Length: 200
Image (cartoon, rainbow, N blue to C red):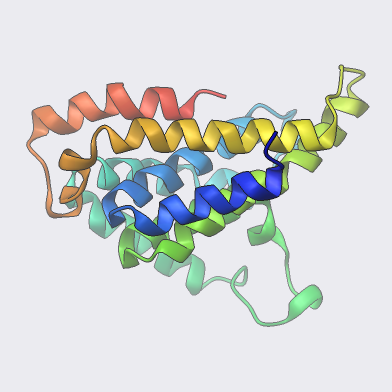
């Protein structure tokens, strides 16, 4: 049986080999699952900064699925973050809101779309992996059955590999999605990609 470290290496190798369009969709999917999980928390446990990034993540989805007009919204959302107090070089002395998993993954997804760099998609993948331990702690505190950490990490990475398999079947559409796709194609991709990639 593959270890979670082995599977993580496979995910990263596949992301590096994919087109930037495919990577953008993957990063959006990873961020979406984390965001949905965060949104499902009790209101008092939700981070305001993370919640404020929902419009940015929605714009990322529109952009990676072929709506070129969403570029401006994604660019503006990233710029607002960069100009905010949440983007800093103060280390542990500064606000850590942007280090929350869903927030960080959303920002990575936006950067993956804007800059078409494999690193950002890889970092989104790693955020989803890092979030597993936190999710298990939450389940434990909720008196729910908690799986073994290694098993949960393997499950997360197998899920990511399944997502990559699905995305790869749309490689022709996604390769040039950043340039814009016909409206009908974008609508179809929302149903055929965003919906399954968002499922927890």
